[in-house]
Image (cartoon, rainbow, N blue to C red):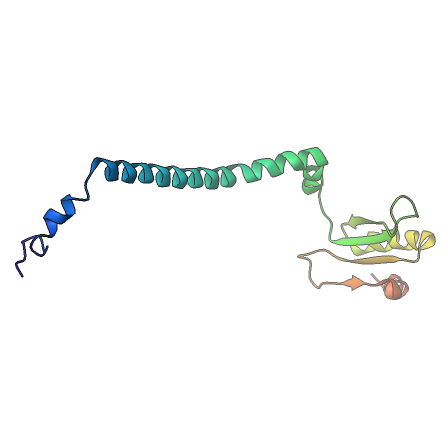
Length: 144
C-alpha cells in the first residue's frame, strides 16, 4: 500500500474528488446555511430572553403596583389577620411594624375583631419568632 505524504492511501484523493460535484456542493452549502441560520436564531432568542426578561417583569410590576410595595420600607415584625367575609373566603391581610411593641398594640386591637391573628419576625431578623393564634394571648402578656 502506497501512502502519500498527506496520509491518504493510494487512490483515495482521486475517489474523494468524485464527491465534489456541483450538486453535492450546493446541498452542502444549503445545509450549512440552514444550520448556521438555526444556530444564529437560537443565539438571538437566548440574548433576547436575557435582555428583556427583567424589562418585561418591570413593566408587569409597574402595572400591578408591585414596584411600590418593593420600595416600601419594611419593619421587623408582622401581624397577619383574617379579613371580614367578602368576595373571597378566608382572605388575610398583613401589616408590618418596626418593633414588637407596636406589633403587639396592633394585634391586641385586631383580636377584638377576629380571633385568627398571627404575628412574627421578618427575615433576616434574629431570633426568628412565629406566634400562632393559640399563643397570641401569651405573647401579648409578655413584657417588652
